[in-house]
Length: 233
Image 1: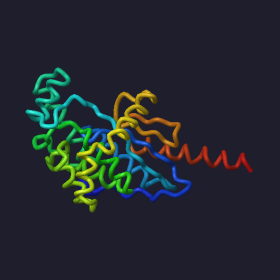
Image 2: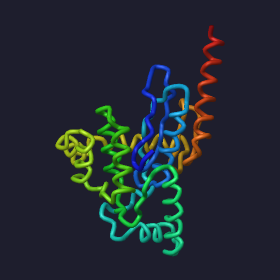
Image 3: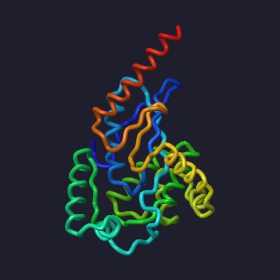
Image 4: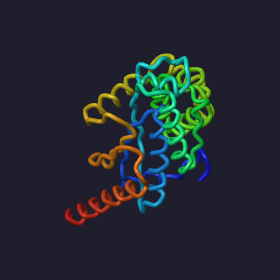
């Protein structure tokens, strides 16, 4: 697996296990968790259907934050700059283990609400998974800006979506209500951090767990479904 190349996830079928994922584009563990889940799905003897949902870790962040990631986290978490730098180095090392090439020095911290709107736009066109991957890679590996509508429209075009249509959706706020609905649902489920995975509508997994943990959960869901099918006969 190379950097920014997702592990193929089996196509959804009527019997696919539904996976609802709450994440934020600005969350480093969400991209890592995505890769770990993909590794589990590749080993799972069945199909999964993945849908991403919006969660903002720092909704008060300005679109054009004046500073780097160390500056942001120092202010946001109240830590010393050297502590933050050490934390980011550790996260980058963990990301590298799953094939990701994080570049926190180039990262452009921003407000992510418009990125979430773009994900809903892509979802309406059946392209949410590709858009999610593109945004994560752009943000963490390429130093691209994912908060401004023009930059986001460019990224949409890079996966084959119509740039003008994407720009219009972002400028009009067409999908903002869907973002807020996702956030309200997260609150109703008691989700306070991301990534958060909900399997089959009933099992929650918090954090970027090891692929083995995701695989075990998928197999448990499959086994319970098989038992329920047998009982219904």
